[in-house]
Image (cartoon, rainbow, N blue to C red; front, side, top):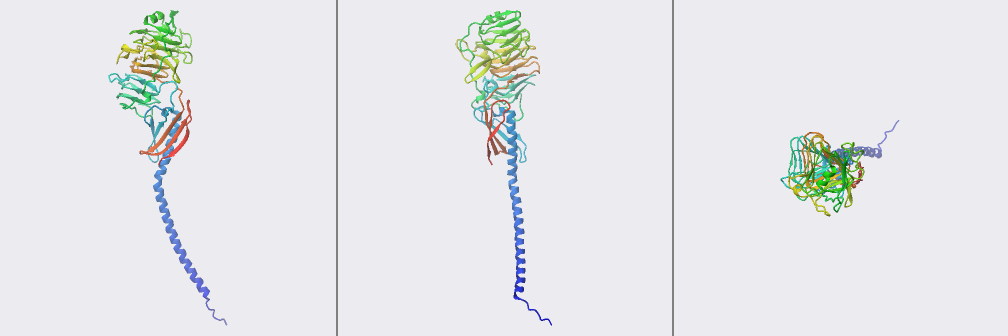
Length: 457
């Protein structure tokens, strides 16, 4: 016979403990689920709150990287011109919106070592005389910065086309002015102090005292003209009936008084010829790597080329302070060692030009810089080649082509420059997000080095 088994107190306590544990686990599970739900909601909210900032940061970083790569191909954006930053800017699409990158060159960045800052600089300030005038149907093309201390007037279908540089005018701009994509639009009616890029470099001629009279003669169709001082009569006698004129390497001072040498149907070469003078081509008749020639104009001395005349002039390396400039044509801005500064009709507003060219196939090519700060230059192309490799600095420039091509082109040569130091800043809707400081070595196709990154927002 089996007896009845009594419940143990321990068994009852174990059952109660299990029930209590289940209740605790249920409560903890509910609390955990609620906590996880809250955490998920909080993280989602935080993610939504920080997503715009992350997108802005990523967009700014990508835009800066692209802008830095642009500096390698276009170091001119890092050139210190003495103007208020930014010197230029570019825009890029981004997930957070359009990103603007501003370039701010630091003092001394990418300064040319053998040319003026501007590849075309006009110094006249009179409202009655535009600094730069172009006429239909051709273009004036400048590789580098262009600065007019007066107005810029592009008439009719003609254009001023600026590559690898900016355009400024102290007075109004009229007509069509074209700049590269990413370059700031032309600045016209610029007020305030003239920035460094618009100031006279104040070059001096290669000789500081009046040269002795030059000696030249005409033989076998070639006039060989030696360096020295020439009156108009002396030059005309030396050229004679020759159709090829060679200005030998050296410095020439022209003291014509108020007179002009009219060269009609002449082939004129200045500097070291590239071959036999009777057969040297145009352009390409002088060797820019050889000894050069400098033509210095005083008083109201001037040249007028027509009838298919060509001037192929390779400049003379001239010490200018701590740099050397290849000066080809100089209009004296001040009396110098017995040589007279330009005057008379040359310095009169809308007066005569120090060099004027006109007629079918007439042309001028200069390897070096034209510097005549008190004079006007008047070019009237009609199918001829017009090129200046380095820079043109004059009081005023008038280009009036009779044919649409070829264009008149200034600043075609590579100009050695100092190292670059610039700051790039990326912004979105006016808020700065990221900045980078670059160090760029001198020379062609430089590779920028990022020396500092700054997160600004």
